[in-house]
Length: 330
Image (cartoon, rainbow, N blue to C red; front, side, top):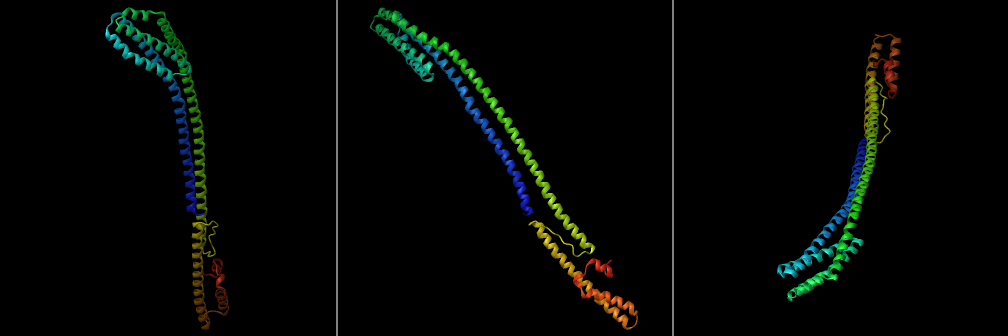
């Protein structure tokens, strides 16, 4: 594996771990968001619904009092403003009761349906009273509003409201209690998610840190060892050891450089041999010339010729040690 590939792999591994940390963090944040969006709104919805029904019950009571008083005032005074007021409010009361039936649970529906039945009966009698007034029969109008049937329906109507109000307090307390428990549970779940996420992120970061250090030490150690081999080979060649070479096993840039270095060392060795051979040839010529004219003794001539002939006959075996022994290098 090339050094470049090793470095890229190391950075990619660290980047991958950082990406995992980011993704895991976003995933846990999304879990918290989902938990809040599901649990908290439901509890709030229950509270809002209880409050809304409470407001509708108050409107039902208010509209009923308005209708009752408007019908009685019209029967006693025959003033048309009371009739108009009655006709304006009556549809609104019917609408509020129908909405209460729709919004309430099964028990609430039961209460509001009883109220609706009583209201229909009361409205029927109140419109009958209004008709008597229009027929100039105010006494009959009053009689309808004072009848046992009318007040029996009023009691049923009022009892339905009282039953709802009694249950409303309990229901509101239950909704509040449920909401509190839900919020507490959501908070606890969020706390657990955060604790778990924190531990996981710390573990991943620690692993990424250890991996980064490990990769850094591995790559730096490998580079340092490879450079040390080059340093030793260069030092040996500088001392005259032309056999020094760099051996790199890995298939990477260092092996390519080592091959180029070894090729250069081979060329230097060849050049060194050529230089030594030329020097030996010149020295041999000089010694033979000196011997012919009797300038050196036969013994000295024999030793020098043997030394030089050995170099010239086996140039491939020339190394630093031999050259030192023969006096060609220091």
